[in-house]
Amino acid sequence: MVSRLFGIVAGFIIATINLLGYGGVVILMAIESACIPLPSEIILPFAGYLVFIKKFQLLYVAIAGAVGCVIGSVIAYAAGAYGGRPLIEKYGKYILISRHDLDIADRWFSRHGSITVFTGRLLPIIRTFISLPAGIARMNFVQFIFYTLAGSFLWSLFIAWIGFKLGEQWDTLGPYFHRFDYLILITGIILFIIYLRRHLKHIANER
Image (cartoon, rainbow, N blue to C red; front, side):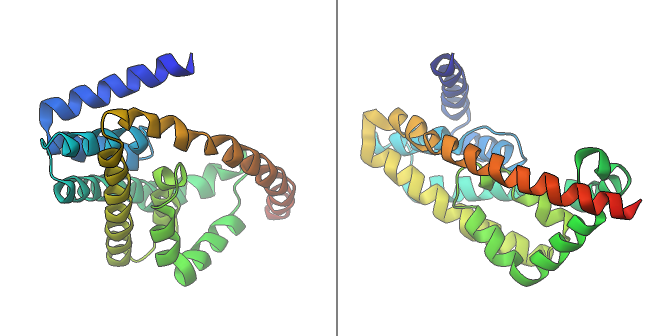
């Protein structure tokens, strides 16, 4: 089942890049960064393979990946900034998010937002969703763009470079990265239990 799904996603990515070239990389990376989990661990290694066969250039792949990430991230940021907080303040209790949580997010991004966005761009899974809380916290937009561009460029350059080095074995990289999903999932479950206990208390206090 998983291998079949991987094949379908990989086929879509390959077809898009073959059809649109660097523009395909931009579009696919924009989709991933708009909180839609289309794995860059497939997009960029294939682009790196095209560098290997001299159809693409590595620097241009990294630039295309970074530009796509910025485009998708701006969409997610806007969703958080202009729709996220009012909706969450009204309906957040139904998904266990309190005003207290939003206040914490505001303070966190005020103090550490640039580091959070930059480092988040270098982590599988997290990089897909980091823009939404940044938007909700109303992180400085210029800083958001700068650190998104910087982190995304490094991620795109590194993963495409690995695809280039792997050559015809580029498609082995995606499953390797997704082995870390289980660790992230277990960590997420533990954090969710802590989150659930603490936030039920905060929501009860706001009533």
